[in-house]
Length: 201
Image (cartoon, rainbow, N blue to C red; front, side):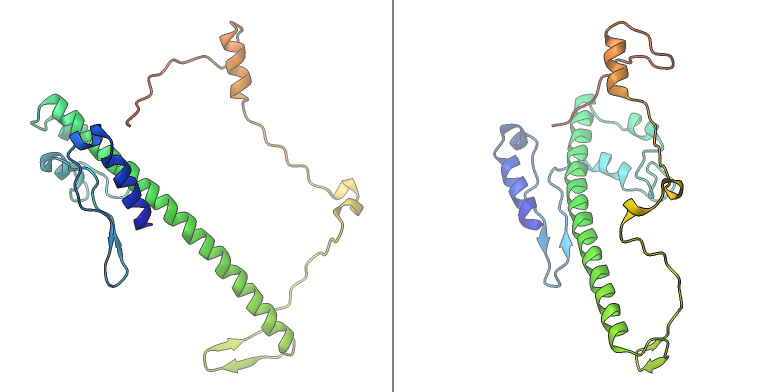
């Protein structure tokens, strides 16, 4: 993953607006123990950074990351556009972190699925080579059997409809509703709302 971060950094450094943003030269690196450490891509003013790195119960909720006290930002003595610039830098750092976290989640999920398949395969192997119902003890574990009853259905098409469950999920079709509202037609319980969506690039 660190190679991808370096690639992202190099791309950003090639843009003029990133050079103006005083990008910190330190990058993600791996220690000898193989631990990955994320570095800050954009320098943040220390006064603003301290607001987001605080003990539990102050400006930021440590468990959710939510800014609890916007007054802390309002009271920060900093020129308006300097504050805006630093907040944008912090947002970009968070965007970079989120991308890395998602990549790690995907990798860990794949590993968990693979490990589960190996576990089931090895349990099947043991079941095939041990006497069913007979207890066994080895230094690392106790091997026990538990009876269970399951329904085998090789072909669902042969099951009568009276034994079939019907699952129905309903939710508003926002796309269809939007088209009707834009055409000037009324839809009970729905209305169009114009919003300004903030974008940080």
